[in-house]
Image (cartoon, helix red, strand yellow):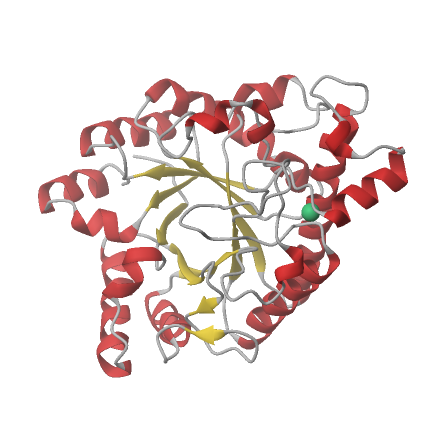
Length: 359
Ligand SMILES: [Zn+2]
């Protein structure tokens, strides 16, 4: 018997998976009803359906951004979750600005070029006031409009590297008297530069959390693992130079300058900005999962720790079941899979094996 109280699924309605949902409202609603009933049947009691993506489109009704499907998925998700007694936190991708709403706010690389977060996508600088206000307006609209239990933040970080936009450089220069582009790693103000970025993001997360809590909802987030390093050195600026090497890490990102995401989620938990911390431990390696499982409950500091396991890359049903057993042995109370569609694409026997191990 596992002690999992929160059995969660991300529902990756982004990229290719968006196309699996019909743009016809009647057919689409039927598909959503099936997704939620599948989740209930398999025993999941918490879902994170993706409702906002980097191209500034969504799956709900907004006065600010466009609905990708032309009908309101979230409304159906909410109705169905209520029927099946499933907790729902819509998943929201931060910062992406495919629609170029704030072209002046794009993250800028060290060499002055605009940062490409993959496939030519640009993203807004997490520190700029206009970017923050824009994202906050979206969050406020969503949490005030829907009968949801919580709000799930994703990409609530820097895009693997710092931003050297004019605003960043001006603000840092004002405070520390030097352009951050002149700093080398290890130089006197290097830690201050890291902390400056960490603090800018943390302040924003505090504001989002305030808005969501005011609306009476829980705050959850998809986060990078950081393991023992963060337990051993809680006062070091968290640049997350221990990101688990995986296929998402290109060669260039092994240069430390490109490893920074400035996502100090243990501190967010200490500040009570997060109610749930869902860690994306997407690796079949049991030792890495063990480290995250051991460090997680300490780092989440009272927030609900949720171990997020991937059904992607080299993961198989057998390696996944071993990880689930490990989480149960470590006494974890929350588990999540990335994601529903991957799980449904596995064979019936693999899926049954995984679902059985959650009991
Ligand atoms: Zn910037």
